[in-house]
Length: 376
Image (cartoon, rainbow, N blue to C red; front, side):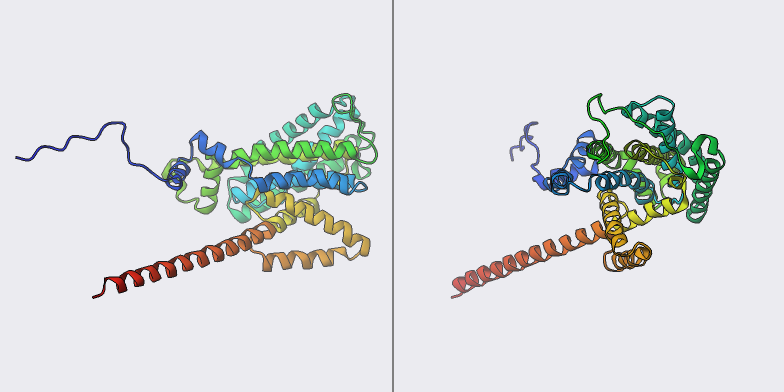
């Protein structure tokens, strides 16, 4: 009679490798630890955020341009949230940019000169406008949404143009004076305070968006973008998620508009124009949609190229910008950041393939030696 095999102790469990454990954690989309790990900065990202700090000391005569790049990058980040992650093409985000700008500017004109509170109020005003517009935007499909957002932008632009007694009309809103930041750092003519102010706001908003896009909300937005027809079967409220994304996107873009009004101390009606919205879209496509860093890279490349090309020819600079855009679209799928990611993948894939081939050849050689030794 055979003796029964005793059960294994309760504290003994099958071991998994570190790779398997990370894969198991990545499947738990809603687990807080996974969200924290996904939002953690890599060494390469830390170097990326140190680049503006180095640029401040390397290019002392371009403080205003650097602040403008970071301001526009913030606006394009808001657009990326709905286009790159939710799949909503928008030509009306200049409306939220202008709403935030005019809100912060009018507050300063009427005596509310504190920068941080004015910035938040400008973002809140744009968020409310985005929440109201989201009910119209999510009702249609791709082309309908594009036309609805375009219509929203045109309506807000004409309202600001007609209400010239409030907005200044085509002359713009002037007389904006912003109090020193924290009561110490005054907004100077050269833009040194504006540089660090824009850098801090961009970094804080980027970290928040990094958590959002790696949260269950962000993952569900990607799923809606890839296959919206399957989501209701999973119990996902598609329209509700899209409205939330559009509202958050409007808030981020409104923060960028308020930041521009405070750092430049001027708001023109062109901040609400369709060409401004098209510029945001071009910057995002240039940098890469669905990649938060693509918004920043696209804004930087567009504005630096604009600055350099306009010095060469102030009239026909758009010709060369168009060539640059076509070259990026045709040669780098997924924009500049997508092209770099694909190139890095090919290089690492080739290295791994060579290492794998060498390992297979070494294994075959060892098997051949063993077979010869075993032969009589």
